[in-house]
Length: 244
Ligand SMILES: O=C1O[C@H](COP(=O)(O)O)[C@@H](O)[C@H](O)[C@H]1O
Image (cartoon, rainbow, N blue to C red; front, side, top):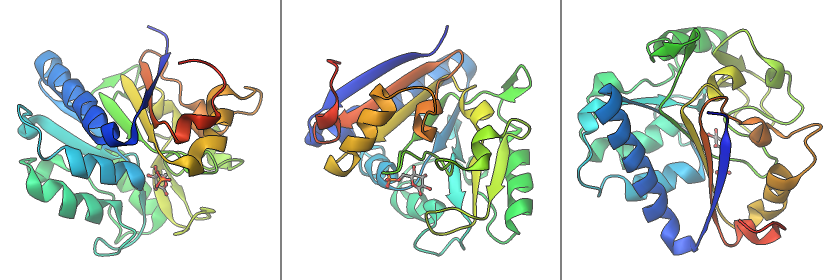
């Protein structure tokens, strides 16, 4: 099935419940079909939305979740910028995911070694055509159109050899990060973006409706055989010209 894009425009107040219900539904379906749910999470605003809504949900078999990070900032686990720290405090501590099913990036290593070490963890995700296939990647987009730690104009946009890449010159601090690469992102069964607030309106119009000749990183997310969903609040969607 080629990538089909669905844009969901919601009231701001409905974003956490709708986003989390979608994630819960994907997890139930993956567990029923394949016995486990391999999910990649992102940092920033989407981490807050997930942590607010997911722990209160019922009928989720958390023991079958395997949690990876779409990207991570290479800072110690107790650093304010650590996505792992945020999820541990606000979500993992409140649900029953076995600790061995959470796969953080190791910040004690150099950025190159952290990427290699994390690639071994990602390699555990069941593969098709030699690529790990996540059940769901939950993505954010920065106001410059970046997603994961894949930034506009950066050479990593062309990365095709490795599933996981280091970056040591991120234009958004901190400079050292580890990120999934596009071949893995686009091998997912489902990618969902969550974008909220007026500060994302201009870039969203470019990403969703702009010229495809030099796509911004977020516009390059087009799962080859999977679904693509964008969850937007009305403020973020305000610049869109088409009807969705
Ligand atoms: O630095 C990052 O930023 C993006 C977008 O964050 P947002 O707060 O603007 O939604 C995030 O998806 C990524 O994981 C993170 O490392």
